Length: 486
Image 1 (cartoon, rainbow, N blue to C red):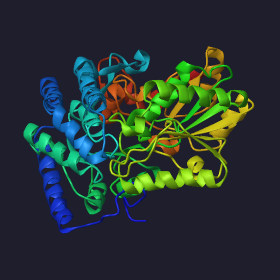
Image 2 (cartoon, helix red, strand yellow):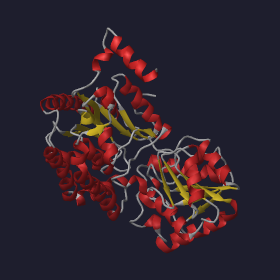
Image 3 (cartoon, rainbow, N blue to C red):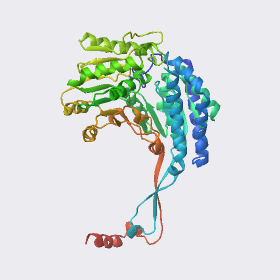
Image 4 (spheres, helix red, strand yellow):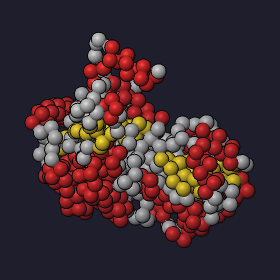
């Protein structure tokens, strides 16, 4: 499989336009490299001004962003566009502005005065240089502008490659950035697969990719040729565990409500749910009650986000049909729910007690399907999760902290939440990222600033040290060793 060709990428391939885009990309890369060499350490004021421009850019394009998302998804709720794709990164930027000056200050480290005298040691964060960001289709603005906030705050220059699946959003982002920044600071490269390959092959100072593990492997292979450090946000099958007695209306609302965000097309959405066997019927009833009260005509309403493409829609339909063919119980959460191919809207369905070899249990679903897996003992539920890859998100429900803490301690995941879902990915102050197959590295908040910085250790020599003990002849070193070890 060639770089970036996978189930998450469109079937269209290279074109003359891509070759033009590649030439422009390389020119922009060279121009940014030259510009960085003349401005290697922007001041606090310069960095704050750049982050502030992102806030202005998003707020002034609120309506065009909503229009572009609707064009790309077939249907996209306007309030969700405002809340997630505009106010989400705006809040992230404001948090960075409040804390940037502190983050940029040298961080002192302890020394041994008996050996080091009055020397000082500290960590100094300096810009890495040029950073690339290959953006997925599900959150075209949040996942392009969001990481850019910390990249610019760390003093870097940035090139963004939006997904080909969201052409309206990609073109709008390009227009927004061109009107806001000089291309030697921020540049948006719009194109297809050949352009994505070209981006992965460039000698970046850091590269961020958000998408599937299959493509993440290819990104890492390409980056390795230049020893480019990478941050990979890769998703996976994020489980929710309901401990005995925790199947109630509030918790079910959290789980099913999370599936309505982008209609399940979110890397930290609940991918499957582990429920005590005796409480499965209650879970199903409460799920039906919630949708009946909150969104009775969900799949036919403007609150339902369309599936990104007919190809993805057909994949989800095939997964559901496989479950039906294998005699799994499929419960649609709408009395009159239907799939509309024109807008690509699809109702939410539960699949009860699916066989473990079904596609919905083997692949990340990324849509409005929720497998409900009964369990008899919490240890069995934990063992099932640990038998798979480490998830990006883990959700544990229960009123007993000792029980929920025990589950959290037994499962390694990128992030986690207790008695709620996915909110860990929305907090500007909280590091976000995966582990193992679900990703490498962190962004958001101070961890994002550090991820996109070269955190350099510095020593400033003072007086009264014994540095010369490290030099030949080693008589002084022998005396120091004898005094310590006897």
